Image 1 (cartoon, rainbow, N blue to C red):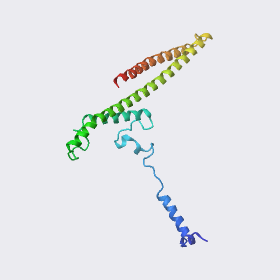
Image 2 (cartoon, helix red, strand yellow; image 1 turned 120 degrees about the vertical axis):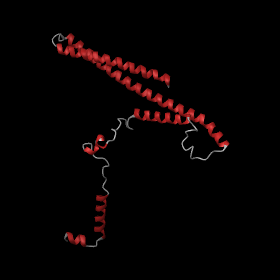
Image 3 (cartoon, helix red, strand yellow; image 1 turned 90 degrees about the vertical axis):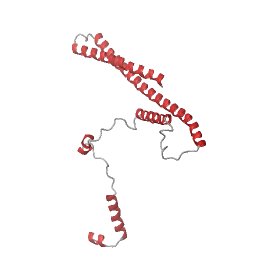
Image 4 (cartoon, helix red, strand yellow; image 1 turned 180 degrees about the vertical axis):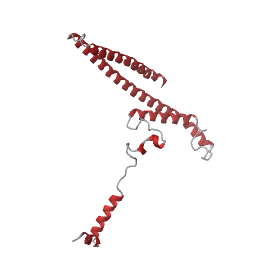
Length: 196
């Protein structure tokens, strides 16, 4: 049987297969954004601002976003009811309803402030943990460099390799400078607990 006879025949199975193939071709998923190499994908070409480095997959970014949300909520509660969302559109409440709402505001403020302090403390603890990890890595690198210097001195190779001696000395100095800067950051994060 030729191809033309198959397509010209009124076989429902052939027609169903043809419609299914057409549907798969028509509804094939398409990428919504051009690839990075495309010139249209450049943020400067379209005039849009470049994306921020933070993302939802970063825990510290999620904690910062939570703290900002709680801060905005606390600010709204502090300015209630003057700038309460929808206050101008809502009908004027009865005195009893207004009294009940006013009684609930202090409790809502306390809950919001407690949640804000908790989020800020989580951010501080996370940042402190990252700084401690960096400090441990610097200590390991410093120990490795000093061990290498000691090994060269014991093998009488220290005075034969002047460039290596200068390189190791410079690396140890750089590690010491970075450690001092890191310790200042750690102190700032630790002192921030008093402001929370």
